[in-house]
Structure formats: structure tokens, C-alpha cells
Amino acid sequence: MKNILITGGAGFIGSHVVRLFVNKYPGYHIFNLDKLTYAGNLANLRDIEDKPNYTFIKGDIVDGSFVQQLFAEHRFEGVIHLAAESHVDRSIANPLEFVMTNVVGTVNLLNAARNLWNGNFEGRRFYHISTDEVYGSLGNKGLFTEDTAYDPHSPYSASKAGSDHFVRAYHDTFGIPVVVSNCSNNYGSYQFPEKLIPLFINNIRNKKPLPVYGKGENIRDWLWVEDHARAIDVIYHDGITGETYNIGGHNEWKNIDLIKVMCRVMDRKLGRSEGESEKLITYVKDRAGHDLRYAIDSSKLQRELGWKPSLQFEEGIEKTIDWYLANEEWLSNVTSGDYLRYYESQYVKR
Ligand code: NAD
Ligand code: TYD
Image 1: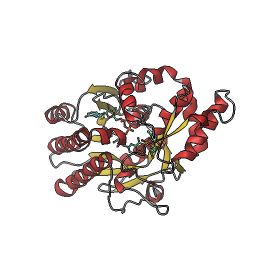
Image 2 (image 1 turned 60 degrees about the horizontal axis):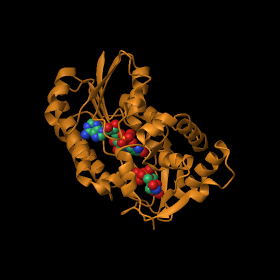
Image 3 (image 1 turned 90 degrees about the horizontal axis):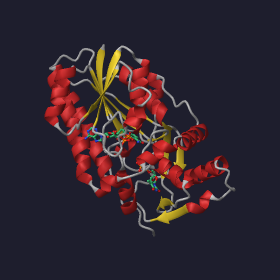
Image 4 (image 1 turned 60 degrees about the vertical axis):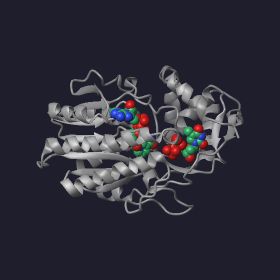
């Protein structure tokens, strides 16, 4: 058995990665380390929690001595690092938490890997999962490539940029066998309903206002989360040490156009009259430092490792809406407590 550590495995993308690895690789023992913040939810992993090659560990990557102990105990041969504070709006409200988890937490993991591996890197890998937001904002033209200079604008993207730099510095300075990927916006099942797509599905379902920032003209490149998990599998196994891979959906949408598609699909699925849900659209104060456009050139990953997205957006968004409508219990469990308080403080009507 090879012991592999996946951090943040109870979150949105992490749960898909854990599920894929536990089911696909019986020769790996997957250890899922997660603090279970508001965004972490063990209900995301019910279907695999009893598998013999899976262990959940509740813990905080900011606690350096705990992380060192864990590496010494389980002697991980691979690390797939997803744990992070991930929501831009929360990073504007509380930047320091993002520095702690995203930067300090990442450095703690790098230190623990360095100590354990102690110069013996054969068969070892430290895979850091990052975001396209580190590249900043595009104008109307162009795509982010692996060579685009970093230019983060939010405390979230600045903290992810910092963590990416540390990962590469540990490769260059200490020889840690790292690989990094930077991915565009994900959507799909098990995403906490504070991010655009699940928040709006939940609000349309409950006939609540749809808070569109500014004029709704910002553009994002959406990728189905299971395609991201497949890319992570490919890069973990075949990516070249020290390299970076961009992952994206070739699927750019202006926010307001995407929201109108969701309204139309949900009117149809919920038996509402056409145009009913669009009436819920409410323009609110824009996000501070709101990046205009993200779009990824993922041709390196396609060319060198043979990955490409499996789903067209039209199919992916239908599947995603169907999942949230069929999993009402999951939705109502996560939309309580801390989330509700946060939600109330977040939105100011224009
Ligand atoms: P998420 O917020 O859904 O999940 C993050 C997980 O990390 C949660 O389970 C949380 O409990 C855990 N966590 C947070 N702080 C922790 C700590 N101190 N110690 C241990 N665990 C902790 O995030 P996500 O959307 O699944 O994103 C996962 C990773 O992918 C992040 O690194 C993010 O930057 C990156 N990413 C996300 C997207 C996206 O669209 N969601 C796109 C590109 C990259
Ligand atoms: P989000 O899902 O937070 O992802 P990110 O900011 O990391 O790209 O937001 C996606 C886009 O949707 C972004 O341009 C901000 C916008 N947005 C709204 O207009 N209203 C909302 O309530 C949220 C959460 C996002």
C-alpha cells in the first residue's frame, strides 16, 4: 500500500478527488486531512467512508507540529494539497485567515514532506492545487498560459499566489518533487452554496433574490468539477516534476448570461412559467477589486498529458441543477448556522 495524503478532501473539489482516488486505486491508502470548516462536510463522502483504503483525519494544516507528527506516523509518499480558504468574498472580510491556511498551512506541509523524505525523493510527489486567479484579470482578449506573470488582486488570490511561490521555492531550494496546477472556476455537485452557481440554484429554488454584482459583465471560464478531478489524477501520475499545468474548460460565460441560462433551465425543471425566475435578478454593489475576466489556455495539458474536458457546459449545468434539486437534504443541512449569518452580512442592495 502507498499512503497518500489528500488535504481538504471534505470540501467541494477535494471530495471528488478523494472519491476518484479511493475507487480507482485500491493499492493506495488515501488519508483525508480536513479541518471541517464551514466548507468541509463529511456528508460529501458518505459513499466511500467505509472503504478499507480510506481514512479521515480531522486536523488543521496551520498546526505545524501536528502536521509533522502525522507525516512521521503515516509516512506519506504523495501529497495532493487542496485544503484552503477558497471564497473571494470571505477573503475581503477576513484576509488573515487566508494567509494562515493558504500560506502558512502550505509551508507546514512542505516542511513536513521535506523532513520525512529527507532527500530521498524516489516515488515521492507533492502536488499543489491552485487557481487561475493568481494571474489576475484579463481584458476582452487573450488567455492565461503557464507563463503569464502573477498579478493577484484579492486577498484570496494573493494568498494562493504566495503558496504557489513557496511550493516552487521548495522545489528549487530543497529539491522537493513538486507539481502545480492552476484551474479555472469549477461547478458541479457538493459545492458550498456561497459560490455563484450553487447559491443561485438554491435561491431560484426558494424564490429568493439573485444578487448579481455590478452589471453582471464579469467573465469566468467554467469547468465541470469531475473533469478537474480527472485532470488532477493525470497530473499527479504523469505530470513532470517542477512543471505547472493550466486546467480550464474553454467555456467562457458572462455572469449575467450564465444566470439567465440557469433561470431558464430551472423554470423548465420546476414547471414554472418562462421568465419567472429571471425576475429574481437583483443588481447589488460590486465586489471590491472584482476581476473582469478569467480564461485559461489548457493546451499544454491537452498536448502533453492527453487530458481534455469531457462535458459540454449545456450538459454539465443540467446535471448540476438536477443534482441540487435531488439533494435537498444536503442543501438544507449546509445552508444553516454560520452560513446564514455570513449571508445576511454579505449582501448590500444597490
Ligand atoms: P472548499 O472551500 O470547498 O474546500 C476547502 C476544504 O479545505 C474544506 O473541506 C475545508 O474544511 C478545508 N480546510 C480549510 N482550512 C483548513 C485548514 N486550516 N486545515 C485543514 N483543512 C482545511 O474549496 P474548493 O472549491 O474545493 O477548492 C479546493 C482547492 O482548489 C483550493 O485550494 C482552491 O484554491 C482550489 N481551486 C478551486 C477552484 C474552484 O472553482 N472552487 C478553482 C481552482 C482552484
Ligand atoms: P464566485 O463563484 O465567487 O467565484 P470567483 O469569484 O472565485 O470567480 O463568483 C463567480 C462570479 O460571480 C464572480 O464574477 C462574482 C460573481 N458573483 C455574483 O455576481 N453574485 C454572487 O452572489 C456571487 C457569489 C458571485
